[in-house]
Image (cartoon, rainbow, N blue to C red; front, side, top):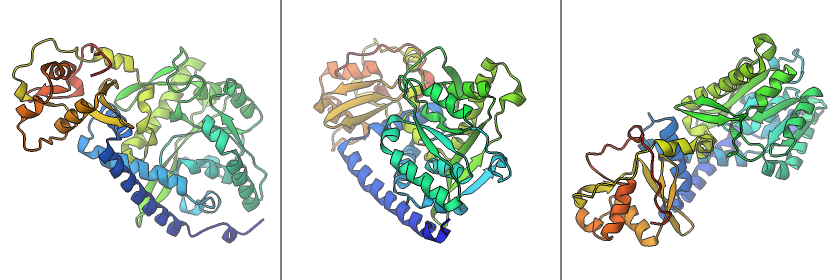
Length: 422
């Protein structure tokens, strides 16, 4: 066994430098993207915040967006030695009985989320002596197997153990069987529940998925984790990570929620699956409510919404004439603009529909949305486009009158999708 001093780098000094570097890199990159209109990720995050956490003011979105990116970049620049030698710098709270050296290392399902220092949950469990089957994306599976093997070797050398870490591709056609075999052999499973990945991808829908309350919305969730827990009578232990800044340094904290134990609950499978899945998402909701700018899935959670229902609930396109034109303005609350390379789009944050725009119309709407009138009156700005173009965006409700308070709550009727090009 080698000594800890051969593995541990000055953790706090290293992380402080990495955090500062990540902050500078994100600031430079995002300022350039903002100037170029490359704001697709921001607009989807804004839409998701408006749907799931409507109490957050839109003026806070930019800071949340950038902080998430900083934490994500920080996680990619963490030194490898932190995976082994820095457990003393990680605060573990909650129901930690499963970490007790005297506790048996029988199979468990550890459920985590894309939040805080989630990348180190695997190392936390491995350091505690759990051999793991980690369910991950195809990209991670293809690119990180050698790294995971190295981490396992280092932990074994440091701790004098013989544990193994196995990667399972979540998109494999027999992923359910692989997870079942892991549990049957006594291995524990680690899965990031909010990835919601599997056969068919995130947009896949089938009868086995549940509608689960989450924050201010209802989302679709896969049920494989809870189903396996009930079938093998193994507990699910949610482990949530979040950063707490101490002396300006983001220190990973981990909260271990009480185990969801099928044997103790003695529920029929369907009831247990619904209960366990709801509990796991409530754990996530509670933590996201506290650390909203640490959840990476703000960029992707719309994939688990019933967007068809959102379209069906929206107000229809208008039919009444515009009168008077000069009183119109761009509805920044409901709509946003972004570019993909050189192509511009109008994005409806209520329905997640995006409409391609010509270059001239994109620039015109961009000026309207940012109140850049270059000394011109509102009437002059609007008159830069023919009446047919103005009417199209009026019908779509991206141009509204001042007396029309824009709020997601007022869009309750079906929306008629316009032609794809504006």
